[in-house]
Each structure stands twice: as structure tokens, then as C-alpha cells.
Amino acid sequence: MSTRSLVATAAAAVLVVGACVAGLATAPADNALDNGLALTPQMGFNNWNSTQCSSTFNEKMIEGIADLFVSSGLKDAGYEYVNLDDCWALPTRDANGNLVADPVRFPNGIKAVADYVHSKGLKFGLYSSAGTKTCSDDAGFPGSLGHEQQDADLWASWGVDYLKYDNCNNDGRSAKQRYTTMRDALLATGRPILYAICEWGESEPWTWAAPVGNSWRTTLDITDTYSSMVSNYEANIQLGQYAGPGHWNDPDMLEIGNGGMTDLEYRSQFSLWSMMAAPLIIGTDIREATPATMEILSDSDVIAVDQDPLGVQGTEISSANGLHVITKPLENGDRAVALFNETDAAATISTTATAVGLPKASGYTVKDLWAGTSAESAGGISAVVPPHGTTMVRVRAGGD
Ligand code: GLA
Image (cartoon, rainbow, N blue to C red; front, side, top):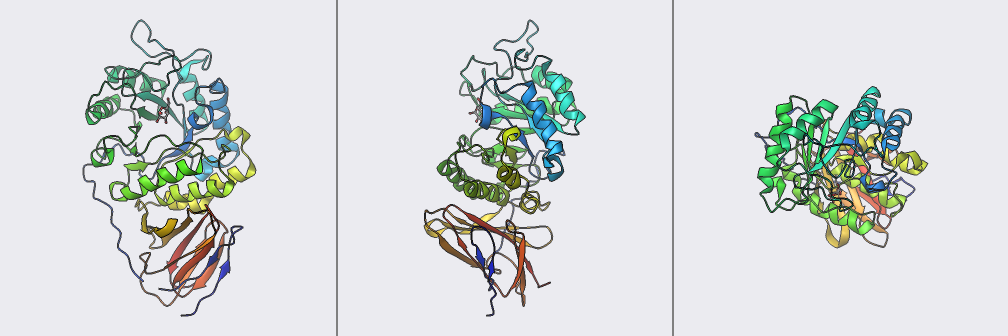
């Protein structure tokens, strides 16, 4: 076998290509929610990971994020939704039972923010809980359980395009029933509203939510640590068969840029989330982001893997000793391959073009997506991957 090596990334990845076979399948979801949305995983911003309920979370921030989506190129890279999380409302409904925006954070109301976001050619998202109250115990904000249609109608009148619907204070009632009631309320508004179920995987929503929501959280909340990121990855990667266009597994939002991981680890999060066709929801305040953060979030080759129209979540073909090989079929017949070194020591991770599902061919073209370099190869795919790093390649049967 002839091989040619390619010193690829700052991570000193060395790629080699050799030969083997794999079959990948998505579960058919004939009954999936058909609201025409999230045919590829949703991309956008949500303030929670960076602000939680601090006073930074306000109209100025959200409008600044919308501005930056346009001026920094993130909009062109595919990011579309600018979303508010918990703590946007007052603790009590008004005399008519309507939710009311916190006048300190949002002095012009929510519709004004939505209008601003729309004026930038972007879409706007909001948050509530399928419970009596939302999750923050700050002041106890009202949830939407029992108010589904009234709230959905109000949001539609404000121009809401996306709902993240949480699971706190649910009185022990059936998740499937609570989330289905809101699905029906959203559909009844007549406004297309992407519906992101945030049930934390508690009642295995992947087994029932394809007809209900456009995505469902599969795990508890991510934190800005390497161990949390890996733990969410390891739970979510097992669930590939349940994902597809319009209905995605959601391992929670991106922590990239928030400071608790290295840029190498953040690059791993972006690689792994993209291999899993996960929603890419930026969770850092990009008004203060470093160039490295913006580069990671804007990588068009990696985003193209996440957004590939075939809509198949990647699967692991091996993970022995914390050395993970993940493969994802792409619409044009290429395979994306990620080599993730979970361990604390540099390691060589190897597979082959046929093992990742490509047909036998006399040669392969291997593009290192983070380095932007390409090499010809005979079949084996191998890289020296630094601790906590990920080498991500796109492999095509047949040389150039
Ligand atoms: C839950 C959700 C988080 C966030 C908070 C807000 O913990 O899982 O993503 O929305 O509530 O209180």
C-alpha cells in the first residue's frame, strides 16, 4: 500500500490513507414533525451559557449580537437564529394572563427586539418551560403549562420564529403530552416556529419526539468544562439512528469562547457537534470573542459537515481507550471522519477509507478541514492527535 503523509494542523496531525467497509443508516421518520423547519440542524445564538440571568442579558446585548452576526460574517456562515433564554419575563402575568417582558432588560418589549433581529435578515427565538414556572429560581418566572395557546399566540404576534421549551416545574406530568400540547399550539398559530424541546433526555425523547419537535435535548446542561463536553458527546453519539432532517438530537449549546476550555478543546466541541449533526447554537458573547473563537465558529468546511443536506448523524466506528473514530456520510458521497483523542496524552488514531464507509478505489482525496490542506492517499486514515484534540477530514473516493 502506498501512503503519503501530510503534516496537517497546528495539532501536528499526520494523515495517511489505506483500505476497508461500513454501513450507516438513519431511522426512517415517516411521522416526523412537518413544519418545514430545521431540514438541516438549526444554527444561531442563545445567551444562557454566557450570561445566565445576569444584567448583561438585555436588549442591548441581543441587538449587538444581531449586528455582529451580519458584520462578522456569521450570518453568511449560516447562523440564523438569535434567541433569548430564561429570565426575559416578569415574574407575574398581566391582568389578561399574558406574559410580560422584564422592562429593565427589554424596555421596548420583545416585539421591538424581534423586529430589530428581523431587520437584519435574521430570525428570533424565545424561551419558556412546559411547567408552572421556568427553571431559573431567581424570581420564579411563569411557565406555559396550561397557557399553551395563549402564549403561542402572543409569541406569534411578536414575531417569534423559534421556541426553546424547557422542562422545569412540570408537576410530574407526562413529557410527551406536555410537549405535544405546545406543538399543537405552535402549529395553530399558523406561524412557522422552530420547536426545540429541552427535556434533558429524561424520558428518552428520541423515542417519541420526532413527530413533536425539531430537536430535543439528549442530556443535562453542558458546563464550560472538557469533562462535561465529553460526557454530552458520549451520550449523544449513541443516538444517531433517531436524528434526521427536521428532527435532531441536541447535546446542548456550544461553550466555545467562554473560557473554561482551551481552543483545542473548543475545536473538538465544534468538530464533534458537527459530526453529530447537532444544532450549532453559539453560547458565548461574541461581542467579546477572540479571533480564535470567531475562527472556530466560522469554519465553513466544518459547518458544511454539520449542515450536509443528507442529514445523517455521524456514528462511532471505534472508541477503544478514549480514541474515537467517527464517520458521517455526506450527500455527495464523501465521508467526514473525525479522530478525537479524549485522553491526556498524544496518540495516533487510525482507520481506513473502507472502514468509514467509502467504496474501494485506487486512491482517495483527504482534506484536513481545520488545516485546509488536501492529500492523495491509498486507503488508511491516520493522525497523531494531541490530547483532547480532534482531527477532522473529508474523504473522497478517487484522487483529483
Ligand atoms: C435549564 C435548561 C438550560 C437553561 C436553563 C434556564 O437548565 O436546560 O439550557 O435554559 O434551564 O433556566
